[in-house]
Length: 89
Image (cartoon, rainbow, N blue to C red; front, side):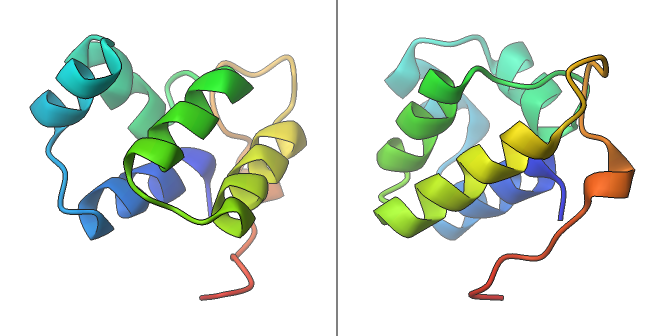
């Protein structure tokens, strides 16, 4: 699983829309779209804020932070060679 896909899945599971999430976290909807489409990667602080906003438990936050750490620092988005599946899936 890619980080952007994971973030989108968590948002949808929480029943949150892009506009609601953007307003709640004071980030542009376009930024959220870029993160969820893996065109850019959020800083760890935003990953934590997003998942806390969605009501995710700490283990899911840790999983997402681990996904981000696996992304090549040279790539603007997710590295498909680093795709993993969460333990709870």
